[in-house]
Image (cartoon, rainbow, N blue to C red; front, side, top):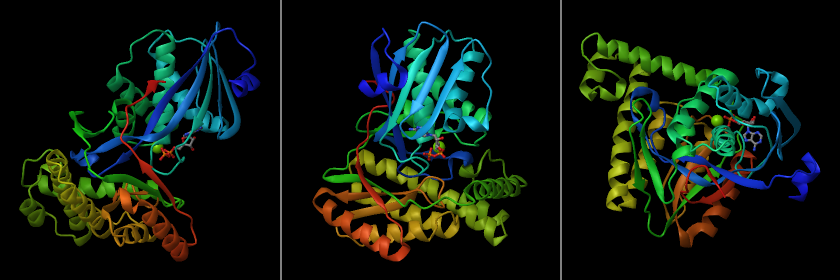
Length: 378
Ligand code: ADP
Ligand code: MG
């Protein structure tokens, strides 16, 4: 509170605290744009916002992560500006709320984060959904979480200019404690699946590897999938790659690179179904095996892993007590997700960090996580 008053000065309204989690995708990468399902969970690392309502139309924002102050007047149209830096993420959301004529009010907001930024755990979606949730709640509205996720995705796509799918915002808005979310990113059909892994823990390892060329490679992969689909469609009536049967792929896609991409999509889709079934049966051994297989497919056939992620997965899998590990997210850096027995955690952490450091000269961060509720007031 002292820090808040130091930044914004005293005010008569109470300071309220809100939290938005980050998210990790347990399995199902690069199939969201092919009609497949993803399996994210909201995690206990996230962003908090301390907020105080104002009696005018000014919104002032600060983040503990940056010296840059953001200030806007709700009476004027908000525009993207490169100099606003991080502020463009929340500003995009405010702009859309403004355009939908939502009667939001002025506020002072201070963001603080336990979530590593730019590491594939969706700090961008967290700050977006948090901003939308805060402003709607201050204005006295009950938040429609799915609508909010869609609005925030639109803000990131159109205002910030990042071509992201719906998974991140959806998981941040719709997370449920102790559950993962089975989500079809095209139809938005979803179901909460109990994330019961017995004495095992959900562990996230941040490679801290700078993600290079990730955007262009992402677009390249999408284009390959579209090409493979169009070849299959020459003969078969399928809506997307995940609908194609394996023999159709083999028959129609002859180029070895395209075939490898399509093969990943097909297998990854199977692994997601296998993982969901395993979770429902409390069969975490099979869940772990699906994660291992998924990593190999992402690394060998889809080629979106990198040395750093492969080294981390390898190190993780060589520790007794780890029953599955895979890269998670778009790839080329970012994080690895693993299932580790609680008795092995100390050993796991020190071994993985040491081996990673020796092989890459980089420091890995290891987080033991839980599946938590989506955005909320604390
Ligand atoms: P990811 O979503 O994987 O963490 P992105 O590159 O999509 O990575 O988004 C990271 C960007 O989101 C940051 O560069 C910053 O602009 C913004 N951001 C995220 N968290 C915060 C925060 N706590 N404070 C300020 N800006 C943040
Ligand atoms: Mg992001």
